[in-house]
Image 1: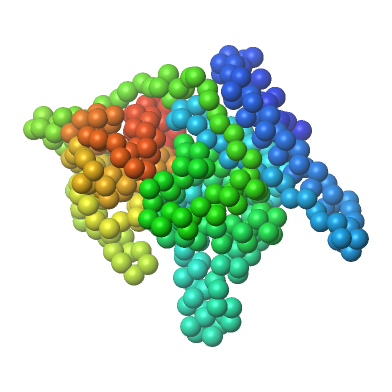
Image 2: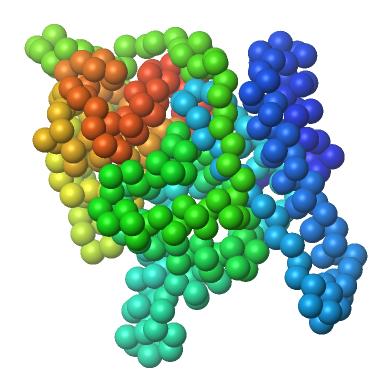
Length: 387
């Protein structure tokens, strides 16, 4: 259960308090973004108050031709480790909105595609009459959340790219407010993607309804708190394989592993070795097969510790595998799943060359792979999966 939001607190005040206590360093770049988030909190509070005390006022205003002004959201972009997630945590907790949703972008889009599929099935069976599934799906989403908060907004999938413009035209027209963080500025979203010209109207729409701000802090806080543990092993040799096996056996505590299967939307995901809430895969099991975000999220729902053997170094000829590794790490990180892996090199050397969107996005993967080795992450994982 989420704690009740404190409507009297601002993100700026929270940052100042943490800096005064010594928990955070004073950071002007973070304070600048906090001020923008506070403006949204204020606007949301105004709309909430107006809806409570003057419900008929909007009706009379509409009759006079006056349109209720929408709350403008925010898109925060910047390098990894600058505090974007921390600021989003504060904002989301304080947001004076009952119907709000926070999600990783891949998870949200998986939900969107599932709803579209369900609507098409209803259309076939005669339960629905509207041919275009996007408006009713947008209505469902808005009924559940008038404030959408996305962590790590990024577009790499053509199916997502082609639907975003239509989906958010519907959502924004209903009054939906979007706040997002990203490593990519809007003009670089879906860079080098197939049929990108069809995606560009969404970028224009985003700029109309959402303010754009860069978080240019000089500090990389993730690297500062790094306290590595032996959960990422390299290079790939007999000693590393033996270390992986020893770690697996220590976690298994004498329990015998078995092959398991996860059923998802009419297909099966094979888990080569599983013991309780722990699973072990080869890199090829997860990244050389046609798996996507929904598959990886299904794995995180069943297991809290994932072993991945033999992550190779990869060049441009393995673009699909690179893309899947990025999405896999995002899913594990967001669900606070422990990762124990063996690889051909340290994360920053896994790509032999940087090309296109995947090369750019891999900076986030490097940062997350490092953070997932930290004591803080492992303790957070322990708390997230306790009981």
